[in-house]
Length: 194
Image (cartoon, rainbow, N blue to C red; front, side):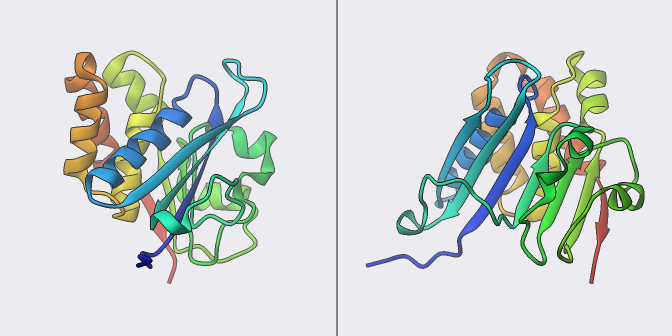
């Protein structure tokens, strides 16, 4: 019997060293722990620190998920604050009513004027994840803060499950990473479109 669970597709953009692939894996792990089927996979360019990195995640039924690139995601997550200026295609293909999350110090309205969306979004979500990660861990890796913002903006996974995943994956950094997760969840800016 085929399970017709709704297919949720997420595309991640960032640079090597920002935790793009780890973020996709953390969300996939949380989804699986909540009884869903998920598949995350990366696509690397030159595979070096600072080079653009792309990752994909699909959550749905086992029968509906492939290993193909995701061209029309409902969710786009951008971990590099300047990537949209040098790679304007990061927003391309997002579905009507989609949710766009970006690591940025800018307010949502300012960032919206810089982005070129072909469709109407349901939410534009901004969090200064690099600064928050630096303040809490001494490292500018934004992925755990972005995880908290993703949880808040989408509701696809719970904060409790995300916390469990972070604790299991990073046992030596548990306290600081849980703070990052909670900061991303609590200090996110959202522009909601009706």
